[in-house]
Length: 402
Length: 214
Image (cartoon, rainbow over all chains, first blue to last red):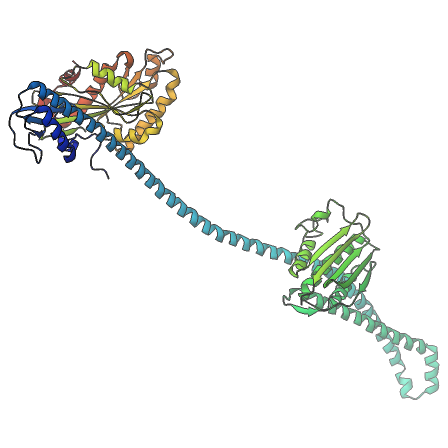
């Protein structure tokens, strides 16, 4: 802090510090050729001044005397010369002091302003730091929300394909159930006819029984009965197989890793998908594969998505080839169809979320996205080749981890 | 308000000539030095200049003694007008008892005048002075130049302001004393109440002004 403001009045001793005053004394002694002393504005001698009496002349700075020169010299010219010299000295000293004090004052004011600015900057920096900290947190919250939404969407996608399946499967199960039921109705009639023979058997009327047997064509009936039961057993087996495949497919929700033969997965998925597209011919070309530690439910879902796309692309009477092999320590599974193919402008976008060429309500636009994500989660990759009208070929590469 | 040194019987007023660069603040002081007839007129102290432009300040001391023996002293300062010297301007302005704002009358100087006046208001607030009650006179200088705002235009723009407006050509001395006269009168009205100038020192407004200007 500055004690003195630059424009406060200056006193004689401020302008003549001891060293200056000492040298001034030597010079004035020569000029005056007599004893003298310096007094302040109130007429009090400055400290250390000798006791001298004589004529006293004022030393004026600005308007009024700021001190006096008292001397035993009566020479007016010498007195005037001494006064002029001291006043010039005082004036220059005053100029210098005012300028330096003003300079200090403005520098200090600038410094204070810088301090204030610095403080404000620190505060705003602190605010920004807090903001950036909460920003990180907010971003993470947002990411969590998005991940949650994504999970829900994937779930929805799965439900959609499961729903699509369910319609086909219901039809497929309904069919054998229908003819098994019809067979059983016939069987009940046959049993009644055999029942009508009971009185003849009990009465031991062999001749009558034989005539009746012949007349009623019981031989054919018996043969038909056996065939009917055989058909029903085959139908029940078919239902059991479908249910078993479905059960296998529904392991989608089990997140644990299991050691699986992917050929089994392919077969079961083809069975489940095949039931809803019986006109489509699915060819399997499966080479022996080592088991792969994977999330089989998810792999099933990926394969199912590819297969459903292929079925949709081929239409009524298409051909789909599913092949598997081992190459370069990778399991390679390809799904090729002879369907409509994918236009070149659409090809780069097919794995994009929500990109769909199907009508609204026909697909979620997530099928291939989910497929790619599942393969990526297993450290693999998926490739597609297609030309319009020439069908499409999707190839999955899954590395075998040792 | 003012600095009263009872021991030395001295009352000092600090008066500041403020305004944009090159508006004629130093010229005002130089002419005033020649034109006033105060009992005590000091030398005009010019601190330091660069190409004739004030770097620190100029100081002109004026004064007189009342019959009661009181020394009434006026320290007239100029500030450096250039924008860069705001720190110095602020330091000179602090503790001011009155201000003359020297504006440049030329038509193309309106923006500079406005910015400098705003700077004056800002700095007054920063050094803790109340612009509402500080004695202030606005002088439109350089009336001798061509292409200046007419007096009517100036009054239309500034007439509603509470401060006295004066017109001057400082270079030839016209209006310089009148401006100072106007400031002294506003100053007296502020100081009178505080220091009982009339009652204790037989100093009326007329005496107060006449003692400096005659």
